[in-house]
Image (cartoon, rainbow, N blue to C red; front, top):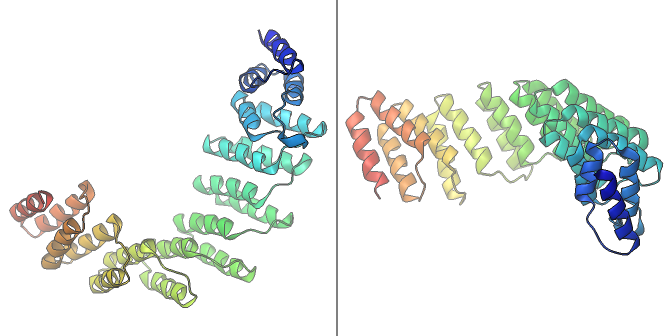
Length: 325
């Protein structure tokens, strides 16, 4: 069946009839017909502007046929002078990682190093991110070191991925160390990088260090956002320092930033947990009037806080009244 389809396709090409090769390529890869696949690629006309570089859509068609077999096809393509553009390779690599085929993605990057094209910073960052999401920080760092050895300079995205990965695993010192390495290498951290570190310090209960990083951002001219504020509000509330959390909330409002649901719920929980029911009820009403849809989390925090104070009926009454506005 596949042989007949190939014959029809090739005849159509010779007659100048345009046909999509996507379905045929998928069938050929699935049936392990590597040589025929490459022949169809050469004849398909889906090569970019005479540069003999496989088009990204064509590469997608190959990947749907089987990821491991695509590695074989990639090698043959390069040997025949049909080296794919690194952008298309990155797209394929990203597809593998999203499908949780990280081992195959790993092999593909090594194949790129062997036969081409040369991996870019995006190639490395894609795989580093995939390993970080698996909590495989040792593997992530291997690729970080490899890219540097190969002369590819890590950018702020790479450092952000690694710092976030270390912080989420509680390895704050390693994350902070990478911040220093980034700066030493001329890479200026952005609000995302600082936010990851701040969140890491809050997770281990060191809100003072998180606040120092916050002030450092401001001093270095990096615009803070509602996410960094929310991290600090949460940290102060968890540490029982509700007054400082309230001070930050006032600053958020004065600066014209829009508090998000996380900001509100963390502050609400902090107020009610500390027994500050009056301000807690005021904040709850402020959320309603500010147009926030109160979800189960926020209502749960409110009900739990008033219930702890023995005011279950008040909690129900106030919640019903505000939610009917």
